[in-house]
Image 1 (cartoon, rainbow, N blue to C red):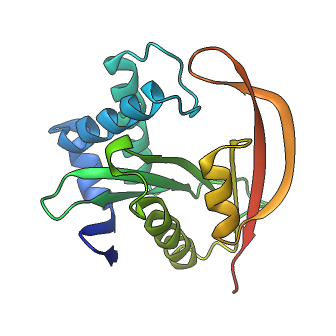
Image 2: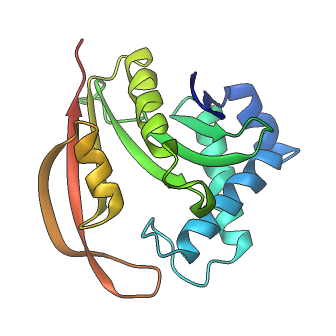
Length: 186
């Protein structure tokens, strides 16, 4: 767990993920709100506009089920009153020849919580989670020229390269994608 000012980053337990994915869904609902907020703000994170709530909720149910099965680590950033304002995933389920690697995915910070260090805290927590999972090679991708690209560089991620026109922005415009890696000490 990481805490700076009034934001705390924590790992969602397998039990909480399973319960939420199959019964209560307050966590999935909060994560859905963040995803929709980010996509409506122009984030290219695999979803297009308009993003139906049912589609976003189905994504989070699947992610929570994956966390419950131990295929991914789900981290959330919460305010002092328990409001979730950010999230990131560490996808640990990898091919047999890559047991040491994990993908960092769906780094999302609600637009109201940006520029407050939430993303930096999530990155620190993802490094800690990766070490706990015995992962030493991390990879991620982001929109070329984005604030996120600069954030990853400041956090010590190494540029691998850029693929022009790799993905679409939520409005359908093409965007380049920048790939990064990070080597964690054993």
